[in-house]
Image 1 (tube, rainbow, N blue to C red):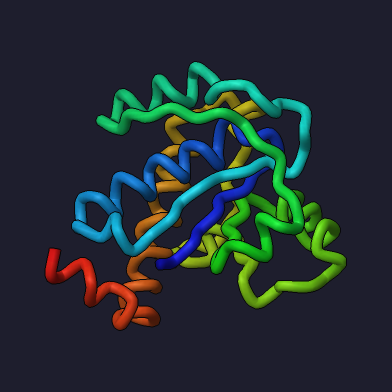
Image 2 (cartoon, rainbow, N blue to C red):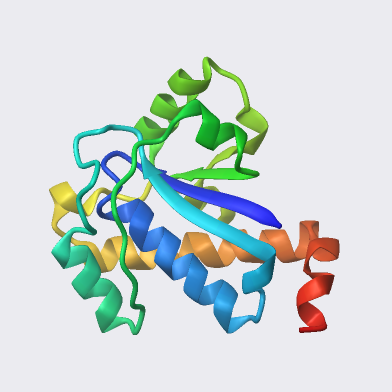
Length: 161
């Protein structure tokens, strides 16, 4: 089982979008039983709130459904996940602050797995949810390809189900 957590500031736009996009990709490949996929926010400002309606609408327009309730990231969550994928440099700083600089071997910017390394701009401020969707989708594709190469043994179980 590979435990993956996506992280943004409030956990109502980018990270739940990433969680649902990645779950969809994994399901389409028949690999769902090899993953536990979650998302968190570094802040408690939105804790308990659902996915932001424009983010949910964007996902639905791309054929991705699902629900989500915002949760704040804790050190325990970092310890219990194999990969912590943040959306931008600010999220990276916040996660490293929570860990006091530890666990850096499992913390990555999502789009560091793409040919165009970048931050995922926050659609809360940019209002460009389509752009966020495509950046997140690109990062998720790159990350999944990375895992399929680096962790091939972990997926043998799924091939028989």
